[in-house]
Length: 303
Image 1 (cartoon, helix red, strand yellow):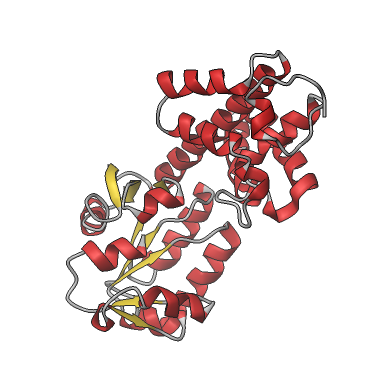
Image 2 (cartoon, helix red, strand yellow):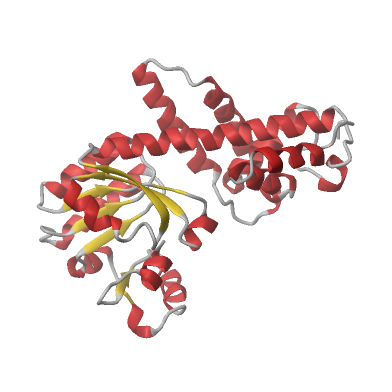
């Protein structure tokens, strides 16, 4: 996201960069001419100088802790805070109130899209808040960080996060369905390649991409997960709590969440959302870690 702001956004001043691991900021800044970015030593130092602040963080408690730190910058009146994290709607409401009580503008702007999509500016932004504030923030989305945006101008902040969480249940359920189908195809002697060909033909895009990722064995070989299991479980937990509050049962999500528990048991923090496939393989009497050459042939013997 930040890369595309530096490269594409119309900004007169250097983009201020802060990461708690300073070397990451240094490595990032080296990609650009010196005048394009500037590393700041603390959150407070960055916020004090910035007019617009983007944050995207992993979990609710981290978002609230960083918000508290940002408010230590002193006068934040007139600054625009664009909060892009996937968190519970109630958390967003609390954070927004903290900034607005101090005179800042606030936009809730979670994004859809995998890291590879973020890298090339193909995210989908969901922007909620006062219309004037959304308009200010939107110039950094479509054509910069995002290929499109869902405009929720003048809607309550929590609506953007509700959409983000409901949308992420589609991803969880997609991985669950793909994994169940691929395991059945292997056990039934069909082999996974024919089902993958079907997915590519009928459901191109995310379905086909996840199918490729699953079958490649990346879910148990990658050194760092693309969609870490703890974040997937956080999203599932938030969505299930929303459903419970509304008197809705999300049975598909409950099944996927149970498989994520098995991923945690098997892989710990290295588990990826695609590792649901490994959990379902193990349930079916197969080895958790797949062997692509064998499963594509329809080897239905338990390993």
